[in-house]
Length: 440
Image 1 (cartoon, helix red, strand yellow):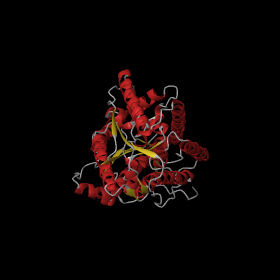
Image 2 (tube, one colour):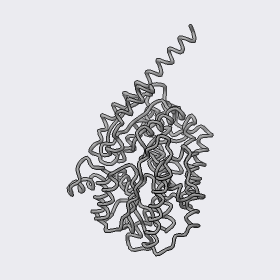
Image 3 (cartoon, helix red, strand yellow):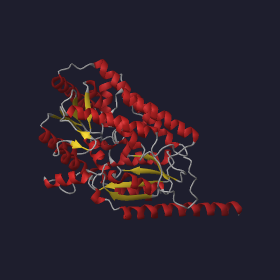
Image 4 (cartoon, rainbow, N blue to C red):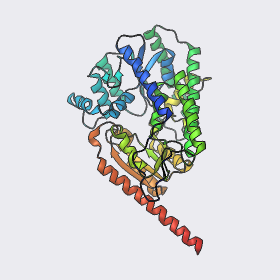
């Protein structure tokens, strides 16, 4: 960045150009992705299957040339384009409660609109795969989708991670693998194709390489300044991570992303003119107001060096990679253990603590989601734990990831400003005390 650094104590100017090369490449790839889905919806060749982001077996679907479709990704695309509210209200007219998951309501509303969205048309899926990982809403969501679109559905039951060691039991791994073999048999019947194990292993190899690159990219934010924002910029990389994982295009994206981010790290270029505060963020962003939300932190020179949201689909940075030598088993392990949503609150505490300590963060920001009770439950206790037990300055704010009715910008901005003013004051006071001791 070439702009002059902000003066000490003065907020960074809000209007900052965040986009880079990988942002543009991501837009191109996702446009092509949705164009392909639209072509299928309009009667063209190809098949698609819907599944969920958290701990998913996308490599199996890719082995059958099934294009994966993630309703959460569709819902957030609707929110970013500020078109979700009429769809949410349509779902509420159909009987969905106001406090139901807003992702679900936006998606259901879209299907009652024929699957037509501003970014393309979603085809009727050839299969619905409910990979149940930590959220019981998923089950009802896919039951309702099956009724609306009339497609066959399969539930994959993922036992909740019960061991504090973060290692799945052999029985749980065998249980999930048996269901994955059932999925393969079902896909053989639907597509009329035999399972090609060599092709499957190649896809898993690409996923493993993507996991390695994603881990290296995340390690880069330990640098000062961080070369990118590990919350707001991570979402740019998460779309290819899920929608294109296992493909040559997805692997190429992450090779280029690592190259760009490494170059930024080596030259000391960060996402802001000046990195004044290093933060960890817990919880998804408010998609309808993503830019405004980011600006609230940018004006204080606050850069996210780690985030839990970037691990909802997979927790790669702590050592897990898909294994082409044990492809099915490693997919089962990823679904059971190595994703955020299937872990206990204690495991989430440990994950955030590692981020704070190993990434040298100054504070924790918790964005609590009004319509996601499962993810947000216990975040008040989380705030108390980090504030009182670990002495980590922690701020909790609340809105929603999809529903614009729960977003109060002035109130949120006031709380964020007050929090960073307090951090700034403590830092100045600590500096004054250190100066007095040095001259004593």
